[in-house]
Amino acid sequence: MTATTIAPSTAERVRSACAVNQDAVLAIDGTDPTPISLHHLQSNGDVAIAVPHRSAADMITRVTGGLPAVLEVTDRSPLELREPVRSLVWLRGTLHRVCASHTREIADEVASEFPSGALLELGHSTVLLILRVSSAVVADASGAEPVSVDDLLAAEPDPFWEVETAWLQHLDTDHRALIDLLSRKLPPHLRRGHVRPLAITRYGLRLRVEDDSATVGGDRDVWMPFSMPVSDATGLSRALRTLVGCPFVNGLRARP
Image 1: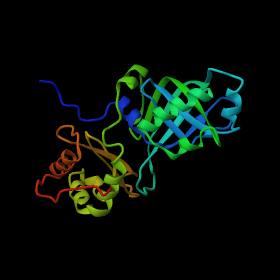
Image 2 (image 1 turned 30 degrees about the vertical axis):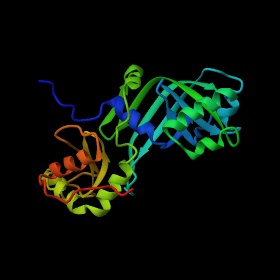
Image 3 (image 1 turned 90 degrees about the vertical axis):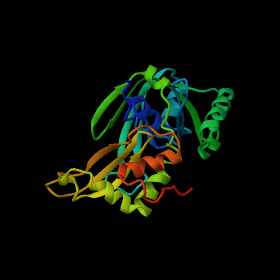
Image 4 (image 1 turned 60 degrees about the horizontal axis):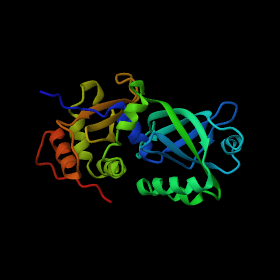
């Protein structure tokens, strides 16, 4: 019998973190990090990056092609946690400038998958660069792990990445009773902390336990897997209710 996957793969975690236009900076040796307004990991493994006009990244790539660079993506919780960073993703590769005609083509492709207002600034206050990824690493509270480019290309972002923010806010604000029930399943030494929903995927729910007491030893993240992966909002609602252990808990529906 094939075992059921109970957690996202490393490649899927990278894809999910990069799907949302999170805080990100572009690092090039010898320059200060460049804040960027848009990053999008394309299906071919290239990352489309919008950098400010006349920034260091813009000026350097005007004269140098194939420049080594690192894109650092910060995955932040949509909730107001005292430590909001959930993970960091580092994509290393070579940086290339995009000609004007190709810029429009890439912008259209990005818009079809991630319609961002930042695309409207291309050619005005920002310019488009491409990072051809050669390696990727993701780090969180459990440690750091690399992922191969082949695995990255084969992976898809979690199907709930677009609605995760709404679900987490809904759980935290409107279903505290459910979170309290889940907290009873934690080890006794973690139950004194303030439990918040940290992340939700098709595989399960991650909780953040915030506590300053010496007993807990600081903030802790706890993974609570579903019995099987889910694929839609109905399945997600059912899985959360099953996770609590009571199938008669009011159904959950994230607000739009």
